[in-house]
Length: 416
Image 1 (tube, helix red, strand yellow):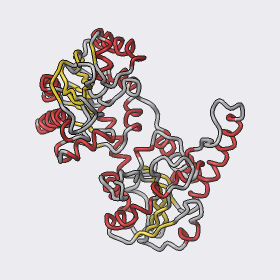
Image 2 (cartoon, one colour):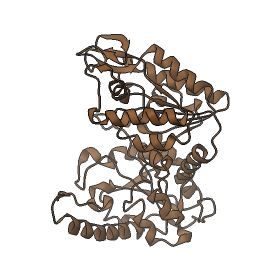
Image 3 (cartoon, helix red, strand yellow):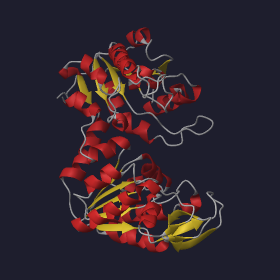
Image 4 (tube, rainbow, N blue to C red):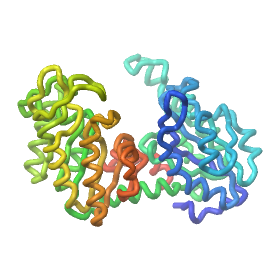
């Protein structure tokens, strides 16, 4: 497999798939530039070696339609500033042949949002799955996706995939495009290499005890990784909104808290499996309940299984935070995906902050800590603790699928 360190970029055009799907405020300003900074080493490598850059990314879910709020033009100045050079812009990613051909060594071109074309994702957008014509439309779209990928590939001499956040998708720019480059002209970027190594550390180089913290609102979205982790971890912390599905499954009252009533049996099954496997399953015993979903709501500490009607659990309580810390601070391997509460509200950050503090303490004592998933990364950055953990992953779904043991198309397309 070709590597970015061995490739001779001088005089070559490199098309690089990055993940610049960064969060923007209502004025189009970037609120967290972690993903842009994460791609810098790869982009700089090409430029420093005398090559030119064509950068491509998606933003949001425009579903094949042009939408100003998803335009990458909004981040053009930020990318230019971060790279330290003026970045040109191609307003149509599928009609950038001339702009790409005119690039000189050291110059950079940013393509408009790939997902303005339905061909990027390769799924029909104007016909429902239940429609008998769907399969035929899907087949036609796959052919169009291949042509779209061929167009993107025609802009450059080599292809670099540095977008771990989309590596679990078989999209035109993340996997199909690789078919149009020879083995010696396609490679993983530095960020992708670091992500793959970080996952290998978690899966293949486990130092015990191993504590995994899974947060978020729904058990159903995390069931695959929870089941896979149960064959690996010593301590499993389940927190966030899914706390209340477990509390109700175990006979509790959860008031107006988020709860998947159709997943109560699944929650009980997880409790049973953890017990059978000898895993220390840590669930919330108390919570910060609020009388409305608001930062300014009235609050009180109540048991997680005895939340009054009209109230909802929005954060982990003090007893729960201590239990989390106890399971984290002596760990040697730590994985955190998902917050312990509605951390976007400043009054409900306590549980997530307790997790972050405990991870920082364990890391300082030599643990390997991997933080993954948008919300967990946002937590760490909000608390100003990014430099106190071992590795922050740029991938959410991709990280989870990798840890589940699934083959990621974006990596397989390069490695073969």
